[in-house]
Image (cartoon, rainbow, N blue to C red; front, side, top):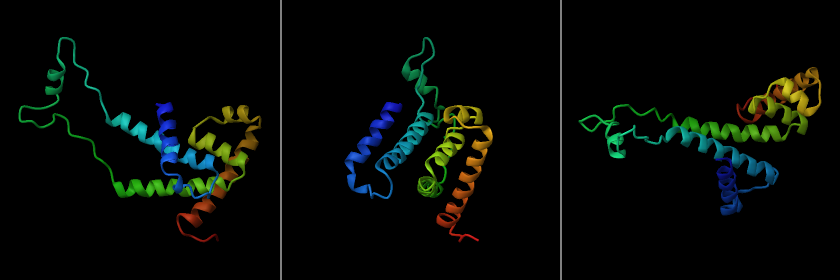
Length: 160
């Protein structure tokens, strides 16, 4: 799945090279596309379900077991959600990405490790060779700068 997501991201970049506006590094741009390709792959994996016939049951019988005699599905489909909200979330993550790009590299990295990858502080400290107190200071600074950037660029508030 990971290899497919990477290939899909690269194909998206190659098919529409004009969409890259140069506002961030090419690596950041492609990583942003890859992030959404991964999310799409995870979502489709949870939506699609293989029909596995029980032992001694044909595939047609397994499919028939999903429907009542009147032709209606035995289980109701899940809610599709709110497409407008979904689009709003994508826009939010684009703004967040721009805000992350404005952070110092080490600060952005520790924030992503903690909040995005959900690594424990111990793991982060070991990986970056820093103390726990230094990690907490960097995380605090990252959160404060991101809050300020999001207040200005997403929520439309001016810094006080």
